[in-house]
Amino acid sequence: MSSLRPSPIAPTVDFDRGGVQHGFLRLPHSRDDSAWGSVMIPICVIRNGKGPTALLTGGNHGDEYEGPLALYELARTLDPDQVSGTVIIVPAMNYPAFRAGTRTSPIDKGNMNRSFPGRPDGTVTQKIADYFQRELLPRADIVFDFHSGGKTLDFVPFCAAHTLPDKALEQKAFAAVAAFSAPFSMRMTEIDAIGMYDTAAEEMGKVFVTTELGGGGTSRAETVRIARRGILNVLRRAGIVAGAVETGKTQWLDMPSGDCFCFAEDDGMIETMIDLGEPVEAGVVLARIHSTGRTGVAPQDIRAKMSGMLAARHFPGLVKAGDCAAVVAVKVD
Image (cartoon, rainbow, N blue to C red):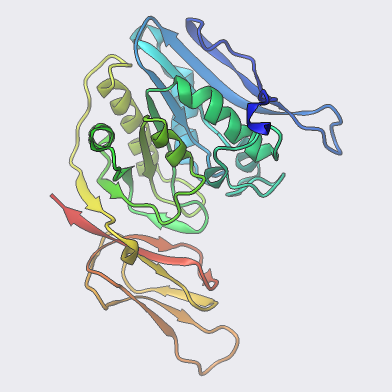
């Protein structure tokens, strides 16, 4: 069976060696411009004594930047003397997509967050997913994967974990979310959990935490500050990094059902009617889609299916049928 084949990825770091190591996950990739070439995925391992292991990732989607900005700096600045355990940092998980500034890989169009458990004999994206599935996730006690909206969504800045059948695991994840201390903290329900890195980690019994920290294919000073402070908070709470958690005010949100999501049913130009963070009443018009093919056509309204707060919106001015236009979340105590 292909799942029993060894991974073609060769790390240039030793996960069991103490101190700080900066290296690569080297994936052979023969191509037109490099017959015996490789994809070189940067990785940092910081290890000191005994303790838990944290696996920290950004760039799961290549057009999301708060995670890479926070993690490249953490890899450069984290003092191993302040560490009790191991911190594995992969700032740009889908490195080909990150280099291209695209959500999916330019090599195989693979969406890393829909490619798990991966295949050692599959596409480049599947090979990277397989390495995380079989080599990195089993080492971890806590997994933190940074996300933001990329080029097509914009979010209020939140840290999140999923509602899970395993309530003990769920409680640990939400405690880490609280420690991250973003302006908003989300109890999240996924609409498409098949093939996700999140699901792979959670099915192994790992504490999994994620974020959505803005979007638009860029970053803001505020969201990068949130990312950098938050990841240190999570590591401190886990006992992996010395120091006190810097708590701040957070508003808890819940995404209880598929009614949170609103989708465009036609192509056109989107007009946002409610701004991020503003209250929403069921039935209110969240956005309008204007026809661009001819004049004289009335816009189509996208209405909220539930009351709450606008947590996300479509980012570019043009939309296509099927695009997520808005996400409503509910404030909870």
